[in-house]
Length: 451
Image (cartoon, rainbow, N blue to C red; front, top):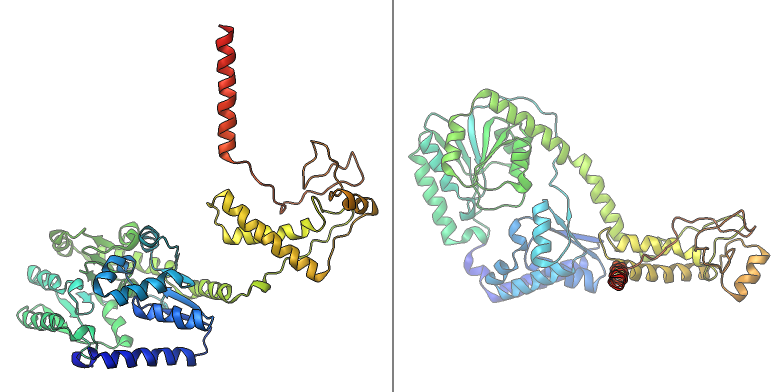
């Protein structure tokens, strides 16, 4: 695709029309995209709002949370991306850092699910070179790898840098100039081999036989190249990128903090025992955290939850022998389980009491509607039924000592059974502070009078 064709406004309009047509024709229930840009906005507009489908955005880079960057690119790009980001049904992050940045910059909550691969049994291979694999882009800083090869002439270096000439991104003159410069300089470095392209099904062999994998990027998300290196029992040398500090925490190699001299020293001092130790730790890490067999069930549960309809979560009826568990008003206990469940699902453990009360009341209302529509009522004695008709209470006296959800079998035959799902609102911490201050004030005044 040539640049002239891409800049043609008619061509842009036709692309959007074709995209909308494709989205209307597709019958999928969930749409997942890793593209941070206009695509996310169009998915929300067409698939979610017009067709009632679910949209999931999976972040690919730490820069996906930087709305200022996208605004500097294009106003239309920024508006569509922000629309999609704020209205999609689920955001998946690659690391805890991305999750924190997403909330810090956008006030949005995402779920962390790490990248996955189909792992095969790890075998020890002959390690005989330093490897670099990435695209030809300025943010990948490939020139630094060339400098590493110059500084360490006794080591063999392999650089795999594909350039997709048909892509709009790679049609940029700066990218073309960068690829030409790297190709020219690589010819002058005898211990460096530059490879233009390797098919995906063959690339793993290069990771398997590398002493160390080098990353020189300015920023990343969680690169798949890190996982592939770990799958090949190969340690990692990163100049700057260390998602969630996993290289340092698991002793997989070294993150230099953008110190080039530290990277040179690390490769010069690398020996066979270090290569083996880093490789072993790398494979142990990837087996525990990035095996698709362990992570796939999480995706299944999330997608099943997205596709659940509101009527699917019906409350289980509480069947209790005499006496009945109904207080305040008939059928309250039957709705309380639904209220607690909905409140727990909609409000996190660290949420405030006010939000919990709000969601609980909405759940209570829904539970009561469910019960009334089914015509179900708990088993009650005649005595409790007569009291319900007058007071709305069952199996409990109007005394101060009695509390909802509790019963005393020694005092009455119409006792209540404690229900752990019953909701008992907590006192506000502001009320407690006020009472404490009042008590302290009364005490100080009494002491002053005594003096």
